[in-house]
Image (cartoon, rainbow over all chains, first blue to last red; front, side, top):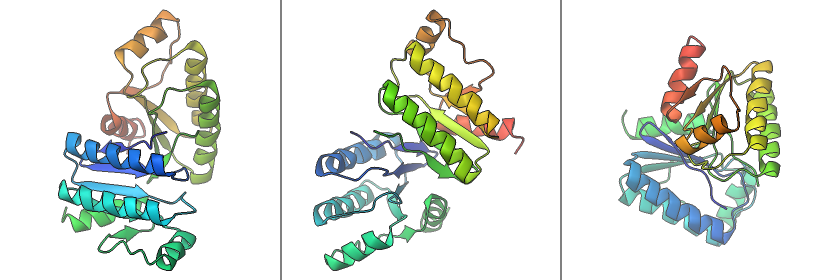
Length: 118
Length: 118
């Protein structure tokens, strides 16, 4: 299954409303990078509100997505990280360094605007 | 599987990037109506860009979703209807009467703003 990615003006918005398995996460990585390339998006919001569990592999893929997106010229904001997910990330020693975060999609878009000086 | 629904300010945005089977369509109907109720959204954009085939049952559900959403107080705009889908709808004698349509998500949001006088 694939995670839908919405293009809205210069931004891509995506909300992950399933538990990510390895296959879905890799597919998502591919799809998002291709979509950034196709659309020339300058910002991406990845909303994790519905993600309740995360493991080290998925966390690594997310980190990779963020870094690769920035190489393609798109700033990424992660939103809706749940306390349990935050706890797991810290427990696993995984840090998404330098990745801006926000509470929800609206605030994520605000954050992108600030980051991009729009 | 479920179709993600994004809340953005007063609007809900959803993009259907899978072929809709009956089960998914019914689930989508439920999810969207519940989300309108929960969030008090006043507008909904349903983007069908990735839908290549539609049958009479799915078309009926879509029509129902639109009408039910309006009963709940949310205006619906359909976007990205492909020529093949439009052709099928006409061939089947199905008309989504009074439902505003637009080319893509951005134009769908513009249309909502016009419809809602915002």
